[in-house]
Image (tube, rainbow, N blue to C red; front, side, top):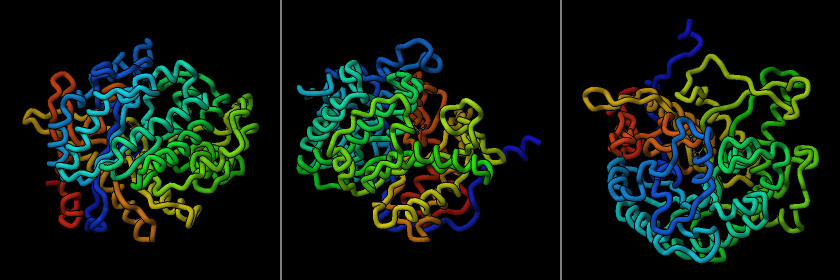
Length: 469
Ligand code: GCO
């Protein structure tokens, strides 16, 4: 009966959709997940460097100390990326590599690394999409309260200004924050990610300071002379009510607000859909100062959407302060992480963003989408990952469906270029198009790498349905 409960995932055999010729095709990574060199060339420690050293936090007590050793192997990694044929690459800067204590003075060697990387991309015809903060906060700032404090938002703006001045002549697009919901929730509320704080419902100052830091950073980049598009990346997760009952619908509305709307509407509409006193009882709300809402609503040029799966909820049981209870989605294929695979939810998500926000919605980029698979190298040296390219195939079709009804999607970044350090899961969850042997640092392009190359180089036109190169 298993195969009825958990269907397998295959690529569609219908003709592959055409994407516009100026569509950005890329892959994405994040500094802590790939760079390694955690204490080299003057880099300061980050919240993740500290967190991974706490016993019991990471599967198998693994760390990102070496990760993919990309800091030393960036050149051959870029060669491989050029071979993949992408025209864009989303990566993040390690804040404490360029500003070891989070604020001045800067570290020349750290800045030089990103100079080399960006020049290397441009030399290979790959546009740099830079994320300023993908969760690795300089530890010196974390020691003073991190995102609980206004100071961190202000230092983030200084850091953005420095990066704008230094790299602004070569960067194609800027992303301020990656998934602030995940950082606030897992980093500061539940403590399963760095910095490992357990503020639970007292987390509101973190929410506010992340939004404020985003707005200040947009302004700082502009003040530094940046003319390239600036945006933010959110994990915009569709939330389903288990049934049509009032209780289940209210639960879905509550999680949708926490997950999605509270991170989006202050930026797009200038209004915060939650009342912090109600949503975060026990939180100190004095962090909100006059003028903050205007800073947060500084116009952005695009919205980055990370999509992996929808989330289902039902009404909470007695005494559950969260206002919802998570319910598994069954009867669909599942990823290596055991996440449900529902590509049509991505179409719905994109269309509903357009329907909800209309003219206030800027152009969209899918800044992350992908799947973990328990990949292995076969005896012939090949990594066969049909599940991954089926996942990508189905989600690209879902995006094309949204574009067909007029949603403005400008690009797609597959998560991830190569297997890497998957946060609390360590190296066990493999998301890459490229297999990484973490003992030898050998890179092996998987079957999905060749499939994706067909997509990006033919701009989809040459794809033989259901068959990989
Ligand atoms: C996130 C992060 C990535 C993850 C990816 C897979 O979305 O959690 O942006 O760093 O590695 O999403 O979980």
